[in-house]
Length: 405
Image (tube, rainbow, N blue to C red):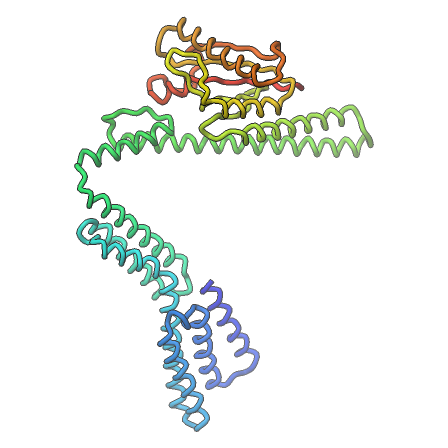
């Protein structure tokens, strides 16, 4: 904003000078006036009051000297006024860009950062000095100075966090365990195997690799979505072409329209279903010709197929989801991890799937012949059974919904 205002002011005076044929004396006056307006635009009236008032005084005296025929004296005063306005503008910009970082550093110093976080404080101060130097060097380019000031402020806040930790005088082991715990949480969220004695650099590299893989997967999904949209657009173009060539409602046109309408309906229904659940309750996604509702929020006690009363809210949302697909065929799949025997896991997964079917039939007006339960045991894992998080993800109930055509 300050940059734009300054440039606009300079441009206005440049145009006035070029169009009006100003004399040298008038031109010098316009330079001082330009500096004055730039200072005011930068906020000097609030943040550089003394410099702005001194500049105003010098400019006023220069006009008086000019009226008295003291041209040389007037020129000197105008030059001093321009320098004062220029300094006022810089001071105002420094306040706007640097003040929050200055305040954060001052607070850190008051909390004895020099003792508890000396290197972090030193870095915050150096970043602030670099930001100030960037302004002094080129005040019209605020981006670099602002970035440096923001980083300085963030570093000062980091120093405050270090101070708070240091004052508690934690044991080294506690710090290591806390850091390891944070790392394990990240690994669990990313589905990366967790090892208590894993080297930090190795764990970091594994996380980076998994995040990179997720981003690539997201990119591929985005590309698939673009392809789908392009296909839909191509179908619409084909419909228009058929209209032009055949001039009316043909069988081909009706088929294409129905296909487009079906695709739109499927997308709309899927978004409605997704909107019903919180992230920790269910994952809703398409799988071939089915909609899958993975009930991540449903947990069974070890070896049990009983559904607790605390899942009433979750199944109320399942009811709303099934209402989006009236007449659909439904398969409830039960899955387990690899712990235990194949036979026990298959029976347990079947019992759990049947319990979910019974709950759905109790809550929904669904024809029994449209819903079935299947237990797959441990045969269809979606995560690594060698990790605790992977096994937890494999112990799941999937509801497959196949809508009517």
